[in-house]
Length: 245
Image (cartoon, rainbow, N blue to C red):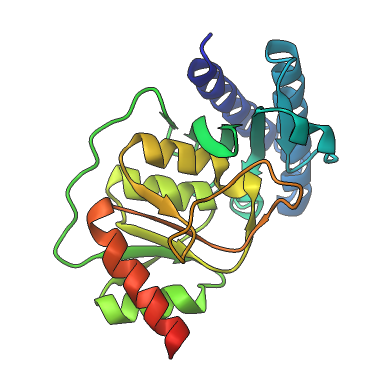
């Protein structure tokens, strides 16, 4: 398999595994999240070590091994992005399998098992045109202050949604136009979604317009912007104006 085929295959099968664990009926919402995370993580980590033994690996559910910093290629995975949504049997959760090459989110796949979809870097599809009134995806439980303020300036509709992967893929699928996050994330939250979004021609950056850099010693990533390229300058300008206010 190519790297992209492997990413898609693993994301797909991890998603199926997670659905099977949920359908077993053995767990309440919180224990289900833990059980699903553990099962998907074991599958992804062992599969990647078997299939790509010469690459680095970073997983949300695995103790970090800083030896990964010595590799030009590092797989970055989130076995369940949106554990709460998964535990509540919602559809807005995802599985992330990304590959950072020299710090750049280069290859990956995002599975949306609730929708029966796997979006991937090697099979980009046409992004539907945006409507007259823009739509911005935000956290359904804690929308970022900056996102709400920018949406108000742009006259954009707020679309509450669960996981980061679901939000990023919503822009590709034409269900949203802007994903602006400033509440802090980690590399596994965005590596695969950013790789897929870039492959679909979208703008991806920090909210100050600087590049997103992966496989760092500190995996914390404060903010993120994913949007259509034609909206990027406008959104970045509004964010900068907020900082000056």
